[in-house]
Length: 338
Image 1 (cartoon, helix red, strand yellow):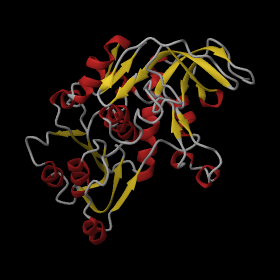
Image 2 (cartoon, rainbow, N blue to C red; image 1 turned 30 degrees about the vertical axis):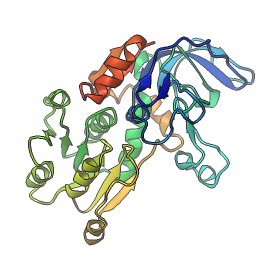
Image 3 (spheres, rainbow, N blue to C red; image 1 turned 45 degrees about the vertical axis):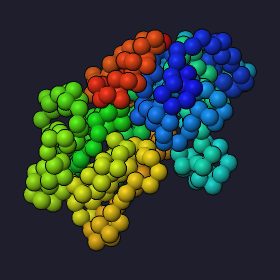
């Protein structure tokens, strides 16, 4: 449970009860996301003060152990992934198929009303449960949510096969982008990442150029390797002012910059550069209706890179080997197995 910025504790709670139109899931694995790190730091949106302590965790998979009244079509013992998004369903955006930008949207594991999956059990609406295909490695279900986020961000940029692309940050968000971009067949992929551990994990990939921004000028490096033009698309997967600025500067005229990682308020953007180069700056949040179900069905074909980069830990180790290790950039992805 997160009690405040930096105050994350393993505690004992009563086992949650399942309500009408809900299912209870025994958690097999739960990933730690970049937005979880933002909450841990007291940044980037929801805060424990909004309703009390939070059981974090929204990248969740597990096995159904109970169903409430009014639930049909799912059975106890089924392996599932959980879509954590809870749009209101009534506003203009929801009514027009854009529930991911609903102004009232909530997410399991981000506030005290919807406790998350860093626990032995989690309760979710039955409508948010998606069956994993037979033969799918059970922990792969925890990768559905971050990969769907990455898929949505790539779709926002309309990345084409053969494109030159840069990803700034190879942490929990960036590694999902990298894997799906490689699946899509991009021409060359530049990854800007200061962590030597993370860069080493990318060293065997032929089409990836890993750049250490602490040792070299990343913008100059990318431009020199693209004949001065820059990349077609860049992704800010780090959520810092330096990251979004670098992403913009290494993007070609007419190119697209996608902000995926959460920021502190008002990161500086060079608006004149946007005007004179006709770059497109866009955001990407969560995913559109249907994308999560599609990724659940395709998780066996996608996610191999994210799965191979994941470090699995127990619930008792979640603070030091999970959140602290990610903050120190010693891991790319962490899965917790309660």
